Image 1 (tube, rainbow, N blue to C red):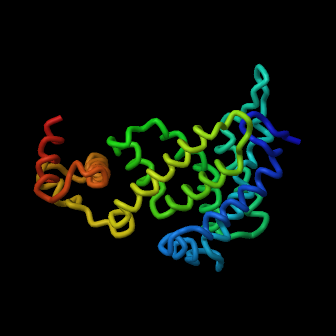
Image 2 (tube, one colour):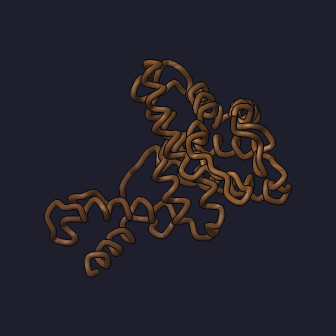
Image 3 (cartoon, rainbow, N blue to C red):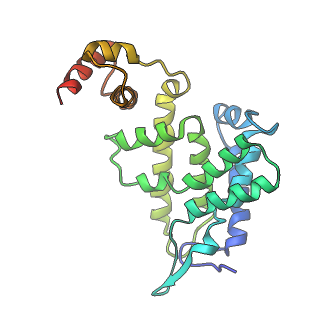
Length: 240
């Protein structure tokens, strides 16, 4: 019942189907490294690609209940959050495992997250680092879903320049991920919690965990490169 609009050349149902087709197209043209990632059977006995295509079909499931028209513009505020919650209910009825449900609902909840970073400076990787850190090993999957969604929505308001800028932005995010992939998949903290407590002479606390998270993020942005720099940062951090 949700028709095409200025951003979508297809109605909602056919946009959902087209997004699945675009996910498959992106897989077909992907590098061997990305294909290997999407071919992995990490949960449910089926590949990540199979789960990603189901997530693509359901990614806008929250749009119908959030649909409003204001001054001729179609709006779907928080459809990602609503859709993720709706999907959990449907997927439980299909008797999918908790890991399958967590993955698919995570894809739906985050499918527009990468687009929200489009104005982040390429030189300032903090926003990119937060995104990668939040999504972890599922980051590539979200990027592919976001790209498929973009390619499946080309209404009259989506000019060639807008499309090119969006796809270039997603390329930057994906390239950034590959540059820090080893940190994500094989995390080796420059300092552990015990070392941080010794440096600051403090007991176990929430602060220790916060500092460890900050160190990982700064390692990903290149602000801290080795253990010596990490120790200096912790010392300064303790004076705040």
